[in-house]
Length: 74
Image 1 (cartoon, one colour):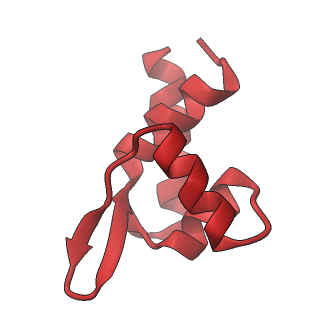
Image 2 (cartoon, rainbow, N blue to C red; image 1 turned 45 degrees about the vertical axis):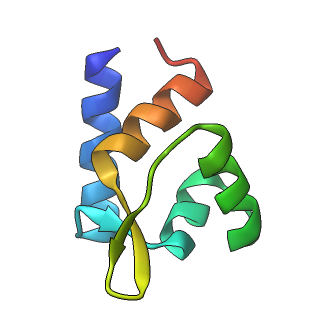
Image 3 (cartoon, helix red, strand yellow; image 1 turned 180 degrees about the vertical axis):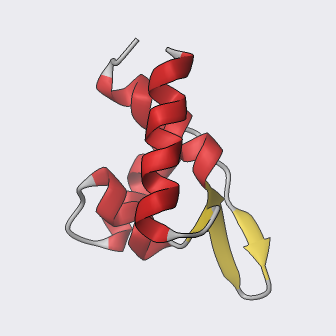
């Protein structure tokens, strides 16, 4: 499982170029049409957001773990 998480993390970092993603980028990773649906997915997976100023960002490491667990890639 850790190899899948590592591969997903590297893929997301290469695609976005940052270690923390905003809600729009998270929606793209989840394959959601809008940010509201992505927010519901984040809450269902218990992925915490980090407040940076007025924005809430999500760590690539935590998202990679959640995506791998959600897709059953273990």
